[in-house]
Image (tube, rainbow, N blue to C red; front, top):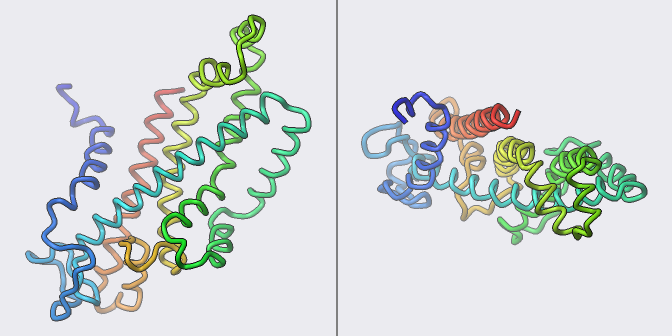
Length: 264
């Protein structure tokens, strides 16, 4: 505890705490317009300046980061749930079930994830909003988790403790939750941390292209898009949201590296 400030994990947790609590310390709401103060440079009243509609960029970034973090947590949780179920069935039962899974997984992974997400998002109705975006990103992202689970199950199902549990009549659900999951939690947590970085990037990309969150919801991608035509006049409109996305991805990747060091 004496040298906690030297631990990178401390700064990762501090960053996420700032994301959660930061909006409580802002003096402006993200959608509050000050038309007479549009495109102001960073200063004392507006810490990171304002956009073309006179909205505080600092508030928009903080609220947008919270939305991105919330979406990534939900999407990763759904992908973990679906991936564990499908990957376990494919690895445990093998045979036809495994061949069908591998075929479906190969079809999904034959397309770059972000291109597949863009193609599907183009056909989503505008009223689908955040729920539609979460379903879309979950639909695209579950395959990598199921592959990790499948590989772990295939490796573990011939171990002595699993064979002994099956011999005494332990049910399938108990096998999964008491024997398989605790032993493959490490790789799944690492995959989830890297997956959250991917979700943040995907959500920002879709919002940047106008296919993500609705206009009423703050988004880092939309804020970047609003400043594309202003790069020569007010670069801060796009630069600061872009930096937040970079920091987000770096922190998740650092967290994944730290977790991978712990489990290996």
